[in-house]
Length: 246
Length: 325
Ligand SMILES: Cc1cc2nc3c(=O)[nH]c(=O)nc-3n(C[C@H](O)[C@H](O)[C@H](O)COP(=O)(O)OP(=O)(O)OC[C@H]3O[C@@H](n4cnc5c(N)ncnc54)[C@H](O)[C@@H]3O)c2cc1C
Ligand SMILES: Cc1cc2nc3c(=O)[nH]c(=O)nc-3n(C[C@H](O)[C@H](O)[C@H](O)COP(=O)(O)OP(=O)(O)OC[C@H]3O[C@@H](n4cnc5c(N)ncnc54)[C@H](O)[C@@H]3O)c2cc1C
Image (cartoon, rainbow over all chains, first blue to last red; front, side, top):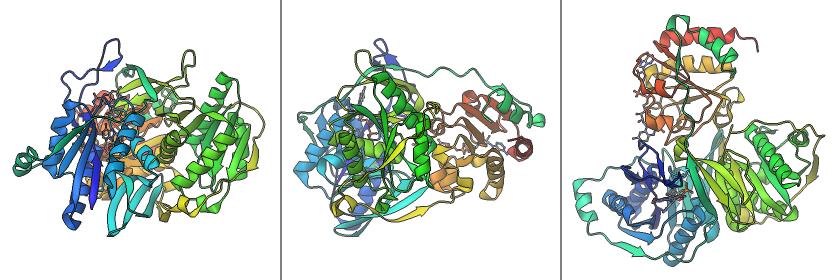
């Protein structure tokens, strides 16, 4: 079983989000980057499948050298090797083209991603890659099991329920809870990660289709209006007459 | 050229988020001096489709193939791509649902278009096609210029009001694409629907009542459910509540759960961790009920009550039941 796991390198959720240069770019100053949380579900499920069935787990990031600490972290968690496509990943379509190009060279049995990258919240790279490769993409999947060497069974979340899907390998799937329980790298993992192969490749020609022009932040809330617990029912009146949401 | 809107049905009716997409589509069409057509797939009442005229849709292409009652990505993409081609659509509008975002991404590849998901504004069309999207889990907005000839937009839920354009009913035309077995390779074998209490889908709900670990255990969830029922709301929960199996995972909102943006979000016994806020911070009005006055959630709230949920919530239920509808 050859599994490719795509990870994006994102600001930790608790980061303060600021912009620089006339609000044209994201200010990385003092921001801690982490493996996209959804991608950790994909990574741990891939490692679990490898442990059960044998095979390899390759981690792929399209990004610049500053993503390498988190690529190493994925290796420490249990991936076998890694590829970094050396490019500034400013557009989902471009990222998908790079992932598809790597996939075409390597015949993976499955390509796992996260449901969404928590920085640009596109939720699109997975489906684009599936379409570019002409294979099914099951997005978002909360469960993934192998029925046999050529078929997988997934549960796909839909609004108001879930679907059970059986697909032939290869396919793309994106992970969400409760697909797996993310692991914390142990000391041994961290040591071995240092010597695992991390290949840096140059991007193939690609297109960007969405240009980020500028950023802004939502207006600050006006502050909270407190209601006395004794008169809690008053809240309902305020919600109707003042906030006008009831 | 024209604007094409994909509308989704639920229990035969058109989803609220799709009515928002139709409104968006009509308004873009007005900006561009053209008309808006809708495409619908699967089980939707024809009267509901004709009623899309109210949002300004002039024509609906309807593929009633019963194999498409459940979402089958490749087949849906084929139908919508064919409709886009027939109508010479240069702008395609979806709601930012699991289905809308998935089909939009595949169409971006197939039609070589630019895609923006999570869109909150109509485009600025002087010198480009610039829309605003919600990014960084609601902590910022980004303006993006869609540079391809074909623009694909998935509109964030509850970001714009459904407008009544006041025209007559839309004409409904039968429509189909030549689907093959290959289009059904990843079709669901089975669909398991949840009990959507009172028919309110969490992602579509205008009001959400949500409970956290402060409620102590699943046996106390009648407080959340009764308040939700009295307000016509959907129910949600924090991550630990789902992890503890007090509530099913599909109710978990936040960074690693579902993102919601209702008009009103009521949080009961939830501390307001940043990962929780990431999924609810686009709600228009936030109410927090917590016994700890220092709970971080109060900083993100519009209304707050410091008190014990077990005393406060029954009073709210009583007041809510007393509202005239
Ligand atoms: C203006 C701008 C600035 C950016 N700056 C940076 C930056 O400084 N550093 C940086 O690392 N990235 C940066 N990015 C890239 C960003 O993190 C995403 O990789 C890319 O924009 C796709 O985002 P999305 O929300 O559409 O992804 P989604 O479609 O939501 O992602 C879905 C899944 O696709 C996979 N995926 C997404 N992106 C990648 C990737 N790059 N490599 C491998 N797999 C991926 C993951 O599994 C992810 O869970 C920037 C993007 C933009 C638009
Ligand atoms: C990577 C990552 C992702 C995460 N993703 C999510 C996510 O998607 N969604 C999410 O919710 N969390 C998420 N979390 C967890 C998050 O950090 C918090 O731990 C979680 O939200 C806390 O849940 P809670 O507020 O229900 O419980 P607690 O933090 O235990 O808070 C309980 C609250 O109830 C109050 N309380 C207690 N008794 C009463 C009473 N009788 N009446 C009224 N109030 C009472 C307490 O004062 C307290 O504020 C994530 C964490 C990580 C690290």
